[in-house]
Image (cartoon, rainbow, N blue to C red; front, side, top):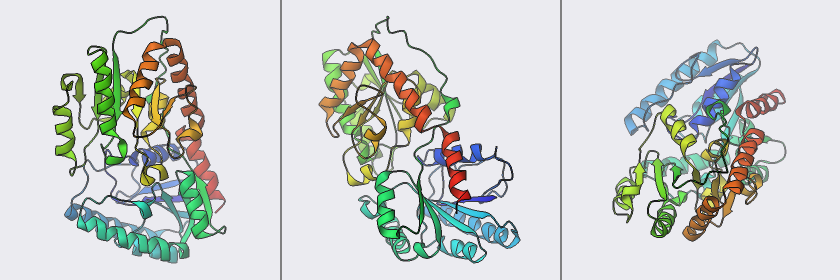
Length: 379
């Protein structure tokens, strides 16, 4: 079996990169499976670009990838060959998929968001690419795709309605490399004097970052020395000045530590060392259609997670059993949830450890990858 990983320009820090990296590493352990990562052909490591591309580097990437892919297609003689395409094909790469289809490659599309309800574009170029992508998705993909992978029930239902029951569709949720999260039992008999709250992400409008800041003010007004807020991630350029000003002008800015974009080693150390994790998305159609990639990693730490009750999140989290569910866009609910956790050590420990078990049961990357292999075998 040959699996060719290809898709949009995948860069370090992009949420979906962990999904691809986990699959890549786990698939290397399967017999008779050849993995190809374009434009690095037959690489033993799935390499990511360090930064989001500009227009020139992005165009160069697509040309280089396409030429490498065409050469590989011409030389391939494996009767069980798959193109694993992450995201939606667009005008820059649909030709490569059509060529692969002509040479009897099976096309698998991994969809993690609903672009038909996207409401934010960083540039005019991205807006034009969006409309071309939507056209290809609606009028071309059904003629070349052999199977869809989706990350949420919303996407599964949408594709079933639009593509018909003849298409193979499987729901593969977020995946977590559990080796990154060594277990460290908490001592519930010791009441802490201070707590570190953690947010990691892109600070996009859907992430509810303003609510987190407002909740942090409420908590710090009550006790200025009890809480510290740690922030990580690469801020979108369009929102960078706005977000940094919010942090700078916050009443308790001295208690907020923005670490920027971290290496994997530093990111996972910070994540594991934090006491309470915040996944407080707003209730937008776009946010509800997908699923937050970092939620699985937060749960895997064994620390309590506060999450907005949107989309599929309540499929995996039961309030005060393996996480704290709150209504979206509600900073007071965030503050109340934090106070519940800090006031109830034993319950907080149980919630955290139950959340860890949830990550092991539902988001273990090895199980997700095994489900992918079974899906491909049936196509």
